[in-house]
Length: 233
Image (cartoon, rainbow, N blue to C red):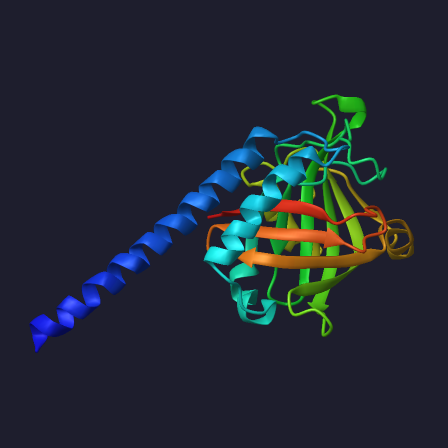
C-alpha cells in the first residue's frame, strides 16, 4: 500500500517541482529585464511592451487570488526595479532630480503607504532631500485586484538620515518623529491633494519576493504604468 501511494505521488511531486521552477525562472527573467532598464524612461512603451508578455506568462503559471487575500504579502518595504521616473510630466521620461536607484514603497497594515525617494536639487548629488509622499489606500469593490489611493501629505527630510535607511523615515514621518538634526518641510495637505490627487494600484502579482503593479487612473499617467518591485528584507 505504501509503495503504491509513493508511486502515485512521485509524478505529482515532479510536476509541482517543475511548476515551481517555471515560476521562479519567469520571475528571474522579469527582474533581470527590468534591471537592465532601471532608471530609463519609456516614451515609446518599448520597455513595458517587452515586460508584459513575461508578466502574462507568470500569471498563467501562478494565478493570483483577490488582493484582499494578498494584503499581508504587500505589507513591508518594496524597492522599485523599474517603473515611472517622472511625476511632473506625462511623457514617460526621467526626472533629472530623482534618485532613480533608490525608489521605495513602504506599505503599512493600517491602510497607508509612503513613496520614499531621494531628490537632488538641479541634479546636484550633494543637495539631497528625501521625499516622503504619503498615500492612504483602501480596497476597491469594483476591481478585486485594485487598491484605491488618495495622497494626503508630503513631508521632506533634508539630507540623508544617519544610521538608518531612507525608508526608515516613513514610520517616523507618520508619528511626527523625524530626526531633528536636519530641516524638515511639510507640504500642506490641500496642495498635496490638488497636485498629486490619487488613483489606483492594480496589484496583479504578489509573493514574498516580487510585486507587479499597474498604476492607473492617476492624475499624472494617462496610460497605466507598470511597476516591477522586489521585497526589501
